[in-house]
Image (cartoon, rainbow, N blue to C red; front, top):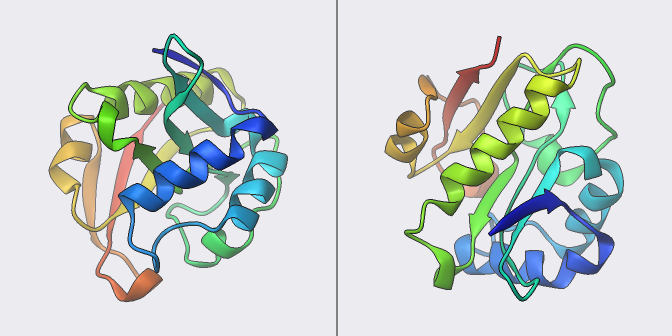
Length: 162
């Protein structure tokens, strides 16, 4: 797999992977992903197979917030240029590419991007069911999040970068 920056032509593949991995209430809409591609291209990575097909992606803004907030799913503003945290809004892998450590590879690639940027201090993420996966990837659980996204219970997971 090759991990690289997203392109606008990846939109349909990204939306299909997102919809396969999340409930309709949780999944980002095509319109939301178009805005994320436009505003967050420097922190939006895709994993492509040898045929160029997107098999997974990771995206999130650089923001001053120490945690992912519900309104970030609805509105994506451009990354702040300095300071802040490299958040993760969505990490998803196509069903056919799961159990191949691609999610961990995407997390590591975004961490590398954040470490090279003057902006990223920590990587916060919300998760409802994959807490052990994130802990295996160096995140610690800061407890139940103040989030009602999709009517689920979420946990604040954070990985310090510096």
